[in-house]
Structures are given as structure tokens and as C-alpha cells.
Length: 439
Image (cartoon, rainbow, N blue to C red; front, side, top):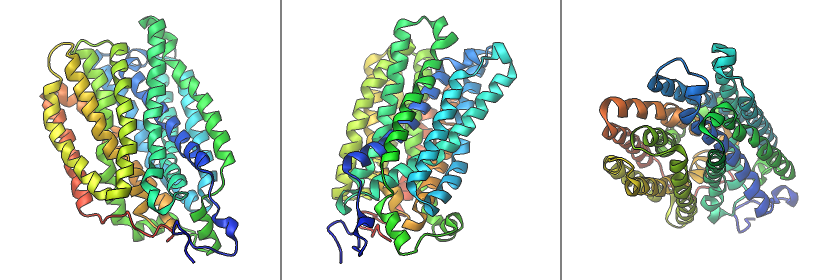
């Protein structure tokens, strides 16, 4: 017998009992909020403070490039995290795996806030920074995919994309909290104080979010679809082997569907911050205020796009957004001209984050829907985290190098190429709106 949400009833009806919507929202959102809080804090610090804290003996341009390269270390580690956490997430369950990934991610972030500077430890300070960043990336590798599964595997059949938006909303929430904290700090501390100790505060403050996230996730139960798979004895003993054997095509498709969202986001939030403060006459605090305003648009569009992805289908929404991104990529360099061009920057950020929300929102449903329950954690996690390398690991560094050597238009071409790759991946993917999520 089928219930209204497409789940098969069994004698053990408690097996299919869902967590309350409130629990699902907080449990799936809190981890990604912490994930993006940590990454935004690092991105902001890497662009504005780390060049002086950890690379004071080289030129400003080289220091910025080196600082942004450390930003990419966590992205390189994330696929390793997706292998480890995907294996255990598909083998022993989503809940316990998510709790461990959260703690690993949070502890490494706090340690970054405690690191000595280059003036104290020299090269060892940089090595410790990269090590903490690497461990942070391993924890992050299991975070998003697990959160997406908590949301979508608890969702009613016709609302998977909307429920899948819960972890996606962690992105603007984490961004707003992180940059809001930097904004407050820069309002009360001098530049010298920010370099001395102010940049550490967001990293240390993330401990509060980690404790809240740990408590919330301890309250939730295992997802109903994983419990159903356990009841049917359909849990695979070798998820990684199985996913690469049966779903390698979906991994490639998922990787390129997501990659452009990473490139777009870190172009908007990290590279543009560096470019605007070094070339366009904006102060760091001034540009952060503009970013925080634009991030509200990002959050709204995640919900709007996810709602319509349930109505019209995921593929149609995402293909339209990738096509629009190609146009945006060709035109946005014209908005970044002139000194202190506030109108141009606002247009750049608002249009960019509208497209970011449309591109990012439905991903929370699309990636899990590409894979069967027995390899869903592994498949979605590997796709998402390989996309982080392809689309984001070195995106700020590449964009900075392109802009310095070939002009801002080359950054647009870079983003446009990623959007075309996304469009091709979607063109080869079937609509997943109506897939049987219990299998």
C-alpha cells in the first residue's frame, strides 16, 4: 500500500515516521549554515587580512594570490571527506555521520582562530593554517550531502525541491552571519586591530553555532527512507564501489550541474570583494554592506526557484538559469567600470545573486534524486564536493590572475564557460522530479 507521500507502509509503521518539519528544517539548515559561515569567514579573511597576517614578506598581489590558494586547500580535501562520510552515511546512517562531520568541521574552524601569525612562527604558521583548512575540508565533505538527504528523505513526494531548499538556505544565512560579524568588527576596530586579533573573532564564534547544531542533530532520528532500506536489508556494504560501478555517469553530470554555482558564488562574494577594494575604490566595510544586502535576494530566490522546481521540474529551471548566466557573464564586466561605481556594483551583485539563487535552490533535490537510496549519500556527496574543486577551489585565484593579466572580461568568459558546461550536463540528464525516491 502506498501512502500519500509515496512511501511503502509496513507492519513496523514507526520505521516510516518522519521528524517534524521544524526539526528537519533546523537539522538540515544548521550544518550548512555553519559550513558557509566558516567558508565565508575564511574567504573574507583570506581576501582582506591573511595576506598581511601570514604572507607579510611578499608583494601585495603575490600575498593575495598565496592567501587565496590556502582558501582552495579545503576544497581539495572535500572529496576525501565525501568518500569517508559517504561510505558511513550509506552504511550506518545519515544521523551519526552528520554529527561527526559537524564536530570535525567546527573544531578545525575554531583552531584557525587560535593560530599564531607568520611573525610568531614563520613558515610553520602557514603550514598549520593549511593543515587546519585541510581537516576543515574533510569535515565539510560529508556535510552538505547528508543535510540534503535529511531534508529530501523526510519530504513529501511533491515537495522534495522545497524541502531540499532548507540546507541551501544555510548558504545565505551563514554568509549573512559571517559578513555581518566582520562588518560589526570593522565598525568598532581599527585596521591594525583587525589584523592583530579582530579577524579571529568569527572563527572562534563559530563554536556557538557548532554547539547549537550538535544539539539539534542529536534530537533528530534517522531518515525514514534509510530506515526502510534497513528493514528491507537493502543497505550496501560497499557504497563507494557500488556508486562508481553503477552511477559514474550521474556523478559526472551532478559535478558539472553544481560547479557553476560555486564559480558564480565565489566570483560574487570573494573575488569581487578583493577586486572592488583594490581597484574600484571601495572600503572593505562598505563592500560587505552591499554584499549583505544582495544576499537577501539570494535567500528569496532559493525558495522561489525550489518552489517552481516542484511545479515545473528541476531541469527546466536549471537550464534557464545556466543560459541566463552565459548572458550575465558576458555583460557584467561593463558594470565593474569606473571608480566607486555604486550603481554598477549593486546591479552586478543583485543580478548575480538572483541567478545564484535560481541555480543553487533546486540542487538540493537534484543531486539526491540522481542516485538510489543505497548510494545516495556517497553519490550526492562526491558530485557536490568534486564540483567544489572544479568550480570553486581556485576560482578566486584564477579570477584574480585573469583580471590582473587579461582584464575583467576574461573573468566573465571564465564564468561563461562554466555555465555552458552546466547547460550541457543538464541537457544529458533526465528530469528527476518524478523519480521513485524509495528505491
